[in-house]
Length: 94
Image (tube, rainbow, N blue to C red):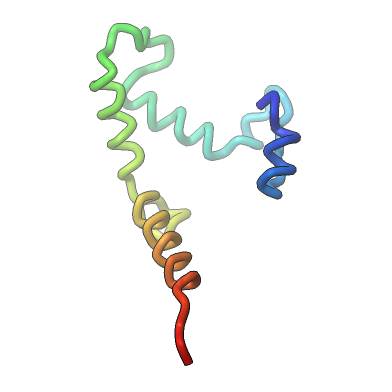
């Protein structure tokens, strides 16, 4: 993230960097690593797999419902947010 300062300026997002060797600060990352290890154990040479096979694993993980999202998928949450934004920007005539 060499341009994190510019990202913060452009978007107003807060940028957070975890401390080295502190996995408890990266819960989502650690959870995702565990999910990935179900498909490719630690030390697996990913170069031995086709791009399609790796994309299939990514699609499977991205389509999982998640407790933190009230058992919805990431795509469902994004669609809901986009619908909400569309409804907010539609002009109405009183």
